[in-house]
Every structure is written in structure tokens, then in C-alpha cells.
Amino acid sequence: MKIISTVALQPAQRSAVLAAAPGADVADRQCRTVEEVSEFVGAGCDALLTFRVPNDLATRAHVKWIQLLSAGADHVLGGPLKSSAIPITTASGIHATPISEYTLASMLAYAHRIHLAIRAQVRREWMRSGAFMAGVDDIRGQTLAIIGYGSIGRETGRLAAAFGMKVLALKRNPSDRVDAGWCPAGLGDPDGKIPARFFGPEDREAILRESDFISVTLPLTDHTRKFIGEREFAAMKPGAYLVNIGRGEVIDERAMAAALTAKKIGGAGLDVFEHEPLEASSPLWDLENVILTPHMSGANRSYMDKACELFAENLKRFVANRPLLNLIDPNLGY
Image 1 (cartoon, rainbow, N blue to C red):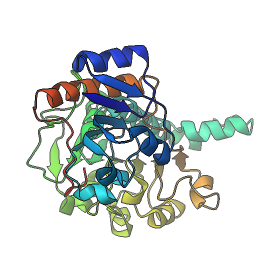
Image 2: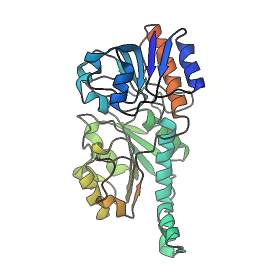
Image 3: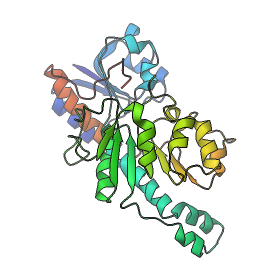
Image 4: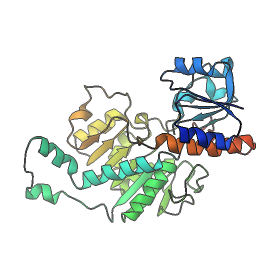
């Protein structure tokens, strides 16, 4: 069995892979471009662990299974691989802890006005006015809408519930509440018991009207592109705070900038954008009610350790011809 990783593996990570597939031939190398991936994969392999996938891989090389190192698959399904017979699995679940913590951190920073305090610190301004103090909020007792109740959304819901928030959830099929994907013990909401109510895509204005905070964790598909636009922003509470860690294209960025500028909503925590890097001309840079980061909410030191833990579990399943975790449905886009 030949396994190729286009990310250099540490000794413990290599050991985890070999323990799952004893006797396998494991080759690993850091590949920073699709051209490097293409050259390294060569004629093919049984299992490919990678961030990047060349569009011609299905026709040029013999690959039996692709394990992505990303939770999203839009960068792969936009090309010929969408109609390929090669099974593709995602790394959904390994980002749940860092991204849900990032989401809660963004919400807490906004509620406690830490983003304004940091700006005041840069100006060496002692900002302790009555008006500033009166704007500080608790998140306890407030309502959080989670738009996209996958692994990240479920862990966000668990943390929010621990903070005393009321959790509402929106998912494609609200009657299907069980999470069948990768979920380490103690994390998330595998049985879907945390939300007070579930909503379907057609009910998004209703869930937004009720919510003080909104976490957008949607994958990018044909059905989710610009899922939140002018009509949805008009439905939000004037003080609502939105966090987007999914994909920038699921929100109409122009409509969002207009709503933020006019203060039709309270603010936004943004880690993803329609175009990345975010253009220097974007009005989002200068808005005081925006907390902005460069697509780094999933970053953490143990990223590859978690990825190899998932890969090892899927390797065991692959060797035993059992169903793989996080298998992409090309028709759904995730």
C-alpha cells in the first residue's frame, strides 16, 4: 500500500499513519503548489493526504482515495474531480476547537468592547466614559444563531451553552440532527440536543430576527453562495453581531458593508472574505464595529496532529473496506 502526504510529517504523525496501515510505503514532502503536488504524486498512490489537488489528477494518476486536510472542499469540487469516481474525504472536525474558540472570543471581544479598547490603547486614550461603559454587554442570556450546524457549529453551540446562551441552529435538513462525521469524545453536539430549536434554509429570516449573535459556519456550495444578503441583514436585530468563519462568498459582502456602515446591525467578526487577501480599498478595514482577521481562525499548533489522528482512523476503515468518515457528496458540495 502506498500513501503519499504532500505535507511533511513529524515522527509521531508518521508513526500514527503506519500503525493504522502496517507495512505501508509512506512518502511525505512539503508541497506548496499544485505543480509540486502533481510532480510528487507521479503515477499515483492508494491514499493521498493533501491540501491541494491538481485538476488533472483523476486522469493522469491512479489514486484510490483523497483525504483533504481542509474542512471545505469547494476548491476541489470546482473542477473535474467533482465527477470523478475517486472518494474524497474532508478534515471536518479537526477545526472544531480552534474555530469555535475563535468565534466565542470574537463575540466576547465585541460584547465587552475590547476591540474599541485596543484602538484606544493605540491612541493612548483612557477610554472609561459613561457612554462606553454603558455599551458593555454580557453574552449570558442572549441568543446565538448558528447558521450551518456541522462539526464547528456544534462545538460553538456547546461552548455557547456553557456561557449560558440560548442556541438556535439552521441546517439543510433540520430533522436530521445526528452528526455522523469525525467528532472526538467530549466535543460538539453529536446527537443534536443543544439547540432550543432547529430551522431550515427557508427559515433563515426567522432565525435571524430572534438572534443577538450569529455564527456563520456554512460550506461554499451552489446553494449557499450569498446565502445572507440584503434581505437577511434587514431581518437582523439592530444590535446583532455576526461572525463569519465559513467562506466569504456565503455572504453578500457589499450588502454587509452597507449594513455595518449604516449601523443597521451592531457589528461583525470576519475571518473570511469574497476575495482574499482582502483588497486594501475595502471599507471593512476602517469600520470601528468590525473585528477582522486574515483567514486564520482554524490555525493551531496541533493542526497536523489532529489531521493525522483523523487520517489514521480513516486509513483503518479504508484497509478494512469500511465506510469512510467525512465522505464528500459531490451533489451537496460537502
